Length: 178
Image 1 (tube, rainbow, N blue to C red):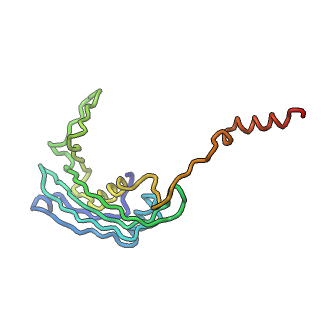
Image 2 (cartoon, rainbow, N blue to C red; image 1 turned 60 degrees about the vertical axis):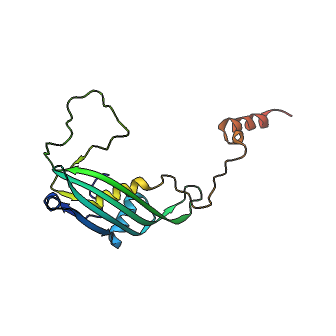
Image 3 (tube, rainbow, N blue to C red; image 1 turned 120 degrees about the vertical axis):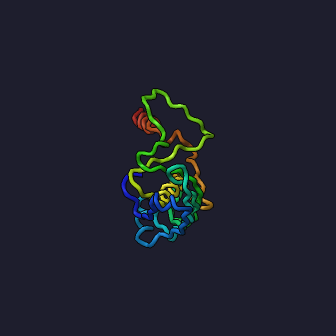
């Protein structure tokens, strides 16, 4: 996600280095409005997360669970509806210049192991934005085509009448002498 998140809650690597850090994050009204706008939601009525940050190598491992009461627009009916979005994630982060950072040497091909852990994020500074990660994973938890409960898409009965060729065919029939 580009740019600064509208909801920020940071912890320094030095704080994590002294032991486990736990935080209960709760977005205020202004942050919820900003996050809703960023994610294309109508509204966010509540957004909370329980976050645990542990030392990992020379960086940190973040484990979190989040819950958001959201209002979004149904992709079928265009009606607004309320829903709860929730999720959990684990992400590892390293400070800038870490010797444990993945090395990217002039590799032409990349092999992906779908079962392997994601590589750690190498951050640009000495702070970890916990709320920024919550917003990122909330965005991944959202259905890109949300449907209001009970909403059902009903396809048009005769697709042939909708094609541009069907219109031309009707025009040609009306031009023919009777």
